[in-house]
Length: 309
Image (cartoon, rainbow, N blue to C red):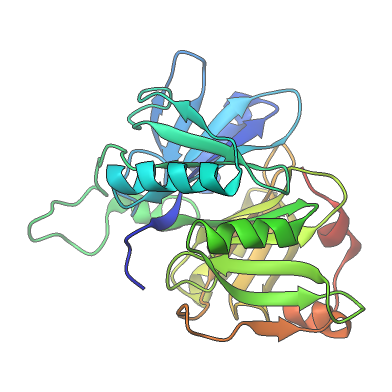
């Protein structure tokens, strides 16, 4: 699909119980690169192959979880159009001035029907990936530091009214539904996986009574072998692993789920498939949800279902 609207997940702000401990984890173990700190004490990080200034922001707080997720749009004209479209749809928006986040332009912020704060922006400083734009090498030394994902890939969010979120994302923001999980009645939605690109998902939601909950943030690796290496890195550093390495039925990706020092779940993910807006969504019935989430075990563990931040 053409990248004329919302292009990709651009950043996520995560709450850390102990900022120093979390920065050490995200840089030394996960392998992100610190790119700045602001006057409020927030720490900015990026994966080695990301070009924009940051994709993860850490903020010290009394509770874990996600403050907001931001998506980059094609240009300023697109930002203005989508702001107007959101208002016409009945969604209240807020403007945040350029510089409120380091090296980031003006943002349009709003609340999804699930209670999550989402924002759109067009401008963020390109600091590159350590290679020149002329005659670059295929990777940098940072590609071997820690787990070393290539990018922040997506989030899975828990909250009510995922059908309302699906309607807003598809009818106003140009996402398309890639996969869905049905409730026992075979009609209502238990989970949705949506994309604004060719990826199997850029955002996902599971129905949950509490609003604005984070299930996990996900980082992309380039192969199953790198997922296995990530498992070794986690064990070497005594990281709390939830489940994996294993494979998803939904999206077909290979995966490990684990927890950062604050209890925020994160995923190291590879694979998946290409999707297009004209593809018919894939549907999983309620009795096969275990197979859809964990294809090898064909069942869910209780912690995966119930632990959110």
